[in-house]
Amino acid sequence: KQEVTQIPAALSVPEGENLVLNCSFTDSAIYNLQWFRQDPGKGLTSLLLIQSSQREQTSGRLNASLDKSSGRSTLYIAASQPGDSATYLCAYAGGGGKLIFGQGTELSVKP
Amino acid sequence: NAGVTQTPKFRVLKTGQSMTLLCAQDMNHEYMYWYRQDPGMGLRLIHYSVGEGTTAKGEVPDGYNVSRLKKQNFLLGLESAAPSQTSVYFCASRTEGNSPLHFGNGTRLTVT
Image (cartoon, rainbow over all chains, first blue to last red):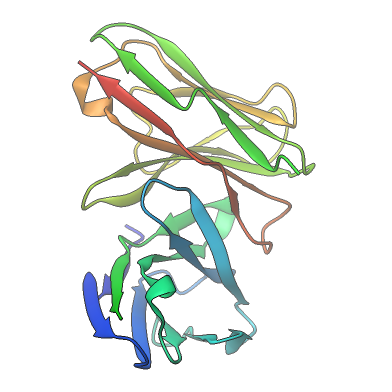
């Protein structure tokens, strides 16, 4: 069974901290891995997509890495801000067009 | 830019009733997906489609049916609603296998 695990489930940090969110997956034959942000009561917004041939992607204060051999991806957020408070989800694309999600990490950044 | 549009936004059903959720995208995307999101369960894939006229089962397909008669629309049907189908339903689409996924804003369904 294909599974995606995100650790931690919840995280609370003071403003300005650098932080790392973790995502692990069991399917070694992935095509890409994508990180999303979800605000309460809203849909999901794509943050970063890493192709299976890539090691990392960066957008502003966000950096995502991918290690296929260990089945892990990390999302690094630099200099966190209260506006970063949201739930962050990872999803990997496997064969046949499927996209499987983790359960998410709920992040709270305190002013 | 409409993107991915889901209708309705909210719905309350009684057990045994049927309904259809509509997802429409105006980005000419090939791939479309239906997910449900429940507290503590993350997003679980119900059904998906890799092109017009095609559908495939996801992780939790039981109790749902789908159709993709037109490329821009992906319909999710509940033939006989059950309280266990109370959830928030999200539709998503993308151009092909290695492109970013775009989401609708969700449909909140309550089955009493």
